[in-house]
Length: 110
Image (tube, rainbow, N blue to C red; front, side):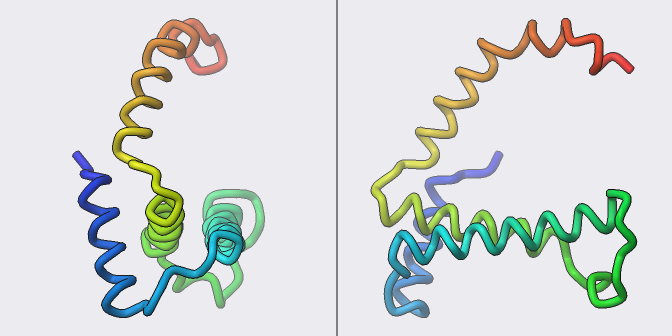
């Protein structure tokens, strides 16, 4: 199980030791958008119907997803969000709300 609290601490330590300071929230939001775009490009070309360009073949989807996680952790840290608590709360809510809905969804039974 991933420990988000520990990941937030690791990112915060890295920022203090290597990053000088956090980028401001708006810069990090733009950075997050850019990183999500890179993930979307890989998925669209590798798993979707677009052809994959030669320049995209060496892209590591895992590394790009990790970039997204890193920026999300930065945003959580700088806005005072305990992401572990928020994630646990969200999972409990989704579990209660969505269990029957997904099991009863005929589109998922194919």
